[in-house]
Amino acid sequence: MATARDIIAPSRNTGTVSYSLSVSPTTTFHSPPSKSFMAGAIPHRVVPKQLKPFNTEDIKILLLENVNQTGRDVLTAQGYQVEFLKTSLPEGQLIEKIRDAHVIGIRSKTKLTDKVLREAKNLLVIGCFCIGTNQVDLDYAAKHGIAVFNSPFANSRSVAELVIAEIIALARQLGDRSNELHRGIWNKVSAKCWEIRGKTLGIVGYGHIGSQLSVLAEAMGMSVIYYDILTLMAMGSAKQVPNLDALLQDADFVTLHVPETPETKDMISTKQFEKMKTGSYLINASRGTVVDIPALIEAMRSGKVAGAALDVYPNEPAANGNYFNSQLNQWGEELTSLSNIILTPHIGGSTEEAQRAIGVEVSDALVRYINQGITLGSVNLPEVTMRSITLDEPNHARVIYIHRNVPGVLRKVNEILAEHNVDKQISDSKGDTAYLMADISDVKTDDIKKIHDSLDSLPSRIVTRVLY
Ligand SMILES: NC(=O)c1ccc[n+]([C@@H]2O[C@H](COP(=O)([O-])OP(=O)(O)OC[C@H]3O[C@@H](n4cnc5c(N)ncnc54)[C@H](O)[C@@H]3O)[C@@H](O)[C@H]2O)c1
Ligand SMILES: O=C(O)[C@H](O)COP(=O)(O)O
Image (tube, rainbow, N blue to C red):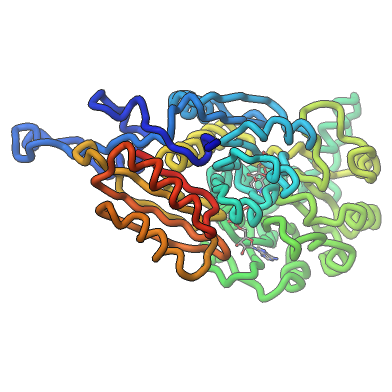
């Protein structure tokens, strides 16, 4: 029997009733009509038709990890069934829950491995309500026609501001002084406390966060150097250095802003600490795997590193609570016993501004994908968009065919579509997966199932959807 993932029934809402235009990606291209337009210069506006894949209340969305209310509002306004949980889920429970879901929304904790995704038979799309997508097996998802979206920079500023705060806090040993006074100890010292003015900040990874931080740090009188695998335009007076060693030997503060990849695993370990200046500082708000923590503990004990701020850890708890100990990470208690180390629970992107913006951005992308098949912003499928079908175009349908990227597919698809007029068609590929979108006209209701089933029976098929 066809499932919600592949068979597409007509929407209850696609008659002549009024439509919400908010879901149309093209809405922003329609200026409000001016007075002269209203006076009759243009007889009527072109109104995008709200395509629906099937009765929207059939769409089941599972939101984990306390996705912001803004995101929940966008999705519930569509009439989807939204289940919301504050925490991540252990693998067994995740597998049980994901079997039913057409959409899952997560943040950085939920691991969507191939093992989990294999059970997600109905899953159309994954929304990462964060920047990182390392927690998702992107390749498996693409090969199975599951689109993945994220929010590439809505929390970048929040992370950059946190790092600025940490640079000053480490230079002035604020964490220690505050902890002491909380225990009743007055310890007024200036030894080894510094201004940050004139010091050198070394930024590893000069992307959205690194470059934003660069601007803020220079404004506070720091010199900025950066290392990145790409040659990137410097902000202000910052200077790119040719390799990591060059950065480590010159920086007073080293801050990490690279993604989690095989190349960045233990990027900062014993050898790198040896290259750093004595009395320098390390900040990691990227991913926990990037720093070899036992090596950091050693470097801090020896005095090589004068202070550190960590926001991310190799193992992080699924929920808030009393979990940060040696069971979670074997060095947990050694780390907490060090002086001048700021430990935060992965809060780099946790501001009201960032979470609200991410909620809207990712939910909008999910709605566009579910209702119209648009993949703009997808991190694992080719980015494909087409202007909306309008209310002036009855008997039109949008065909989405995600298929293996092998020769001869377009010919077969167009043989199937040949009985109809193909108004627009776009096809693009990324690796092994290709994405075809075609708007066709002269389509009768009875044709929909035939088109769907014919495309679905092609050997190249990954996912077939027909929207109208
Ligand atoms: N602590 C938090 O709450 C928080 C919030 C947002 C992002 N993050 C993490 O920060 C990371 C960076 O975020 P971003 O938005 O700046 O990402 P980005 O993709 O904009 O920038 C990453 C940069 O790192 C560079 N890079 C990749 N591999 C490298 C390597 N081996 N050596 C040197 N440079 C390398 C890339 O070329 C790119 O310029 C994210 O991947 C995410 O893991 C953490
Ligand atoms: O990837 C990110 O955006 C950050 O690591 C923040 O993740 P979070 O949304 O789980 O706090």
